[in-house]
Image 1 (spheres, rainbow, N blue to C red):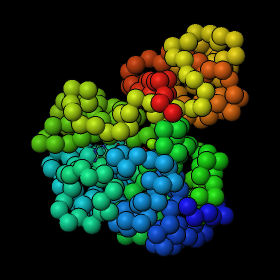
Image 2 (cartoon, rainbow, N blue to C red):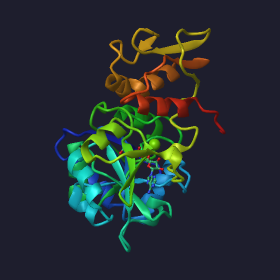
Image 3 (cartoon, rainbow, N blue to C red):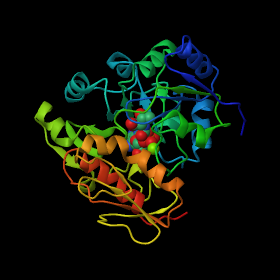
Length: 318
Ligand code: TXA
Ligand code: MG
C-alpha cells in the first residue's frame, strides 16, 4: 500500500476545499468531516479510488459504502427516488439520514461501492465543507467512517490521524463532530420503510413526517453489514448496564451513575451520543481490563446508542 506524509488542514483555512478536491480528482483518499463521524472519502465513480477505501480500512468487500451527494439533484442521477423517498430528502437533508434506494442502471458508480447489490445508499451531509467538496468535484463521494473496519468511529481529525496517518494524503479538520454517532439508515422499497441502522433521527421522527410506519430490520432479510454482531469495538472488553466499576475496570457513567467519566450528567441522550465514541476511545487508551458502561435509556437517540454498545460488547472473532 502507498505511504503518505498525511497533511491535516483546517476546514477554515483558505484553499482547504480545493486541496481536498485536487487529491480526490487524482484518485486519492481524503478524510472529511461530517456532522456524524469523519468519513474516508473517494470519488465514487473511480474504481481504483474506491478499492483503496476497502484496502485502507481492511473492510470486507461484501460491506457496501454510502454515497455522499451535494444535494437531491445529484442523488437523482444515481438512484430511483420515489415520492416517499423525496419527501424524506426534502425534510431531513442535508442531515444524518441515509436512504437505501434502487440504483439506476448504468449509473456510473464504481461497482464495489454497492458490493454487488441493486441498491445504493445515499446521504447528503450537513457539513457545509463536505457538501462544498462534493459540489466542486462534481461527483458523489463514497465514504465509510474513517476507522479500521470493526473499530470505533472517529469523531475528530486526531482520531483519524492516530489510526490512518501515513495511509492517506489529507485530513480536512472540521473540529469535533456534533452528532457523534453514524447516520440513521432507512431502506425504502415499494413505499415500505425499514430501519437498517438507528441514528439520531429516530423511526418516530420519520413517521411523524411521512405518516408511514418504519419496520424493524430484524423482521427483514436485508443485511447491512453495520449489522455484523461485533462492530464499533474498542480494544478492551465491554460490559453493559454497569452501576459500579469492578477491579481494573473504567466506568463510563450516564446520569446518576457518575463513573470515571460521564456521558451526560444531566441524562441528555444527544449529549451522550456526542460523547460516546470519544469517551470509549479515552477509556481504551487507559488500557483497562474492561470498559463498563452505565445503562442508557432505550428511547429516542438512546436506541442508536444501545445499538452501538451492544455491538461493542458482542463476542469478537478476531
Ligand atoms: O454517518 C455516516 O453514515 C458515516 C459518515 C462518514 O457519513 N458513514 C458511515 O459509513 O457510517 P459506514 O461505511 O461506516 O457504514 C455504512 C453502512 C454499513 O453498515 C453498510 O453495510 C450500509 O451502510 N450500507 C451501505 N450501502 C448499503 C446498501 N445498498 N444496502 C444496505 N446497507 C448498505
Ligand atoms: Mg463504520
